[in-house]
Length: 426
Ligand code: NIG
Ligand code: FE
Image 1 (cartoon, rainbow, N blue to C red):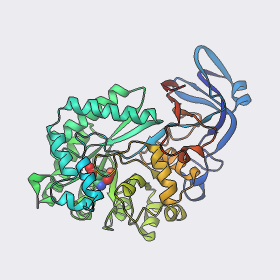
Image 2: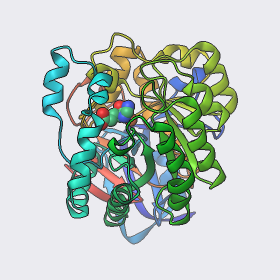
Image 3: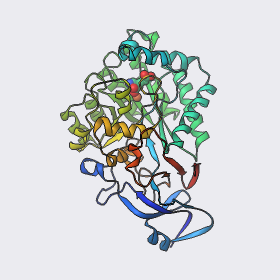
Image 4: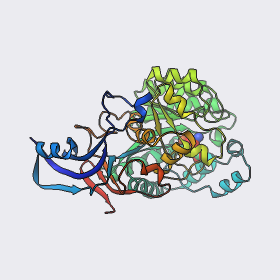
C-alpha cells in the first residue's frame, strides 16, 4: 500500500505517454505514434508526485487515501500529462499588427527585419518597457497557456539585445517563474543573439563575440537561464557566430538550443548536433543527412508549424521524414509578436496534423513527452508514470483524437499541477 493525498478516478481514457517497450528517452520512429492509452484508469499522487497509475481497480487496491486528500472524478473523460510548450518568446512589449498587414500584402519577414522592423521593432518597445510591465504581460500570457493545459513553459529573452535590457527580460521571467511556482513551471532561455542590435549594425560578428564572451558567462554566473539559444539565419547570425555562442554556453554548463534552417539552409541543424544541443528548432530546410546527425547526437527536433503557417510559407518542416529517420519530434507554439502570436498549443497540434500530416497520436507525443525531452526534463515530467510530477489535464472530451480535431476550441477542463487543481472549468 502507498499513501496518497491526491486521487483521480473515473478516467475514460488515460494517455500515459509511456507505451510498452519505450524505455526512458523521447519517443522516436514508430514510438512517436504510441500514447500508451489505458481505458478505465485512475492515478494517485503523494506530495506532488505520482505513486500509482493504471486500471482503476488496481490503483484503488494499492493506495491508502489520506484524510483531506484531493479526490476527483474525471466523469469518463480524457486525461493526459500536462502539456509542455518548449519554445516561446512570450516576454515582449508591443504587438506588430501593422507588420501583419504588410506581410499579407506581400512584404517579406526577413526584409522587414533588414529595414529595422520586425524583431527590432519589438526590441525598441521592450527596451522602453518597465520590468513591471513585462512581468504583468508575461504572467497573463503564461496563465493563458496554463488555462489551455500547458503546465511547463519555456520563455526566451531576445528582445533586449544589450546586457541591461536582456537582464531586464530575464529578471521579469524569473519574477513570473516565482509568482507562478506551484501553478506552472517557467523555464528561461537566454536569446541574446536573436538579432543584431541597431548599435552593432554591420558589426554582427562583434556583437556575437560580446554575447559569447561577456553575456553568456554572466547569465551562467548569475543563474539567469538554463539554456542559450541563437537565431542562426542568413543576414542574422552565421553558423560560425552561432557556434562561438553555443560553445560558450557549453563551457559554462548551460544547455544549448538553436533556431536552425528556418528560411535558408545554412547548416544550423548540423551545428546543433555538433554542440550537443538539447533541441534544434524550426528545421524547415533540414536535409535527410542532417537528420541522421540529429538522431545520433540525441537532439530533439522541435518543429513550429504555426510559424510557417502564419508566415504563409509554402514549405513546412518535413516532420514525416524526421519520424522516418528516427528523430524524436516535439511541437511548440513559438508564440511571439511577429511570426506567431497564437498562444494555443492545441492549435499547434492541429497544424501539426494538417500541415505535416502527423497523426493525432504523434502530435500528442510531440507536446508532452518529446517536448519535455526538448527541455531536458524527461526524468520528472512528460508522461504519467510513477515518480514523475502529478501534472495532469482533464479534457472535456472522451479520447485524444478530439484534441487536434476540434480546432480552435479550448477543451481543457481541469488542470492539475503537482497534485493541486490550478484551473477548474468543471
Ligand atoms: O522563432 N525566428 C526568429 N525568432 C522568432 C520570431 C521573433 C519575432 O519575429 O519577433 C521565431 O519565429
Ligand atoms: Fe522562435
